[in-house]
Length: 611
Image (cartoon, rainbow, N blue to C red; front, side, top):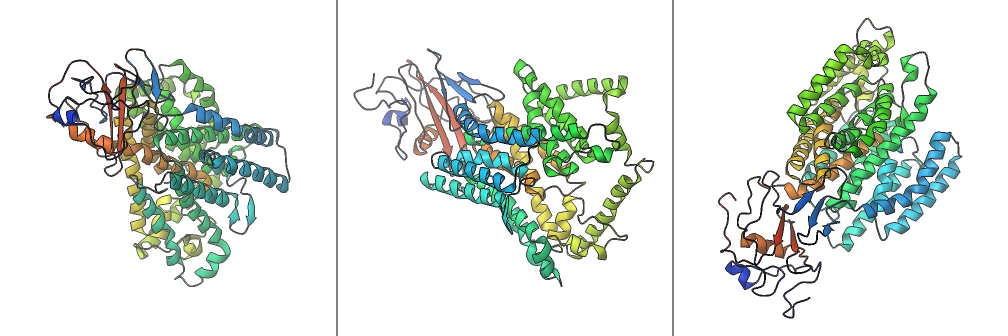
């Protein structure tokens, strides 16, 4: 029953911003959401210190693709889900229903090999886009899901409408507009600062300005306008895609759902490769059997699968004790088959490195135990490794049966030497955007057909300068740190999976880009930048938190700060839990406190010695 003195809040009532706690709270026997002298603060609340976020004893942590942190009432066992910070499966299901028809249409085209005229494809895409825009007026997340699922297919289905105008650019602009509009309705900036945002913007800004460096080279202007302008607009599209996802992901719940959309899109890419693999079974050479998939390039497909497969591996490893996790086994076998059939040596090694870091995050004993078992298995039964994989690795040597592939490996060193010479001549600015194919003949010791340095690091240093390369490496290092902190400090199982995945994806991509410039195509790199946004959002509550924080006796000043930051107090009756959530937008530090009413008074609140 609601109290007559007006002090008891309704269920879900928001404490007004700037409203301090009552006099009794300042005096030390605070009551939250209860009449005077009815229910004081708890005498003691059990804490979890290792994660840096304050928790009470009656919080149940779910792992994997659960709903996140569940707050349970002690007396009646009722469960409340914070849909802004946890996965809202009802919304995922609603978006899934909208995507059923486009998905069925795509399956018919991919599996059955139906060829439709371009006009028909554009018409269907326009109908889907209009329907999505109408729905986006109420829920812009539908555009986020569609864009994420479409991005890997941006190369295969570009939907070119005019020079430099295609479906990808239009999609990104629509999502940007929708994100900015939704943010204005919330009365906040669509590009509100989060950790790592400035570093990401600086990376894109400095790399994009390298076009000005190229224009100072004689003859470069006509070269840029005739051949490389589309490449430059494609580079800018990556930045636009990052900003579009950033504007549409406004809370942790949306970040987790975006990760689900990425995993769903990855499954579609893998399934797309199955039909091609079936068509190429029995061909008489490795080169003919290699799968290009939606990228039409085996190394790109192998690298994409290598880094997007890691979240699935992390989800499985952290839930091996549950039968549901083993339902992923068929998908794992299919994905491994597609990865192997790309015959990309760099992807093999990169995937192994990424898997190693995921297992290492699971625990050293776990890593050494399973690693030892794997070594014993390979030693006793070497036939578990496909012969095609061993043949492809052996082609790196001079004794290879396929001499042309060996020359391809040698040409990499020729182009690396040329890129080093370019970097040394202009270490600050480089030679300019896409200057390598324009100038390579002046630096290569033998003629080569390739127009790429075949290394992302040399790609950046030779064309954009060493400072830009340092920005890129700094962004990668910061992503590793954020992933590690999310994994260590979060109590949400799916957040921990995402954090461990980013921790492993960065070294995986790092190795992939040693042997090729993979971070240049929107189809390949789009999911990575979407994951960057996700990690940046999930890291916000754990930035600047201290693992030694205790709640032996809560500080009144922290509670007053919670009330001034639009904390949400929920109360359904005497003896039930009241959850106060505070996300400090200035300090970007989250405090989650579960307050349980008790009948005994407590001493004056003071600060713990370990705070």
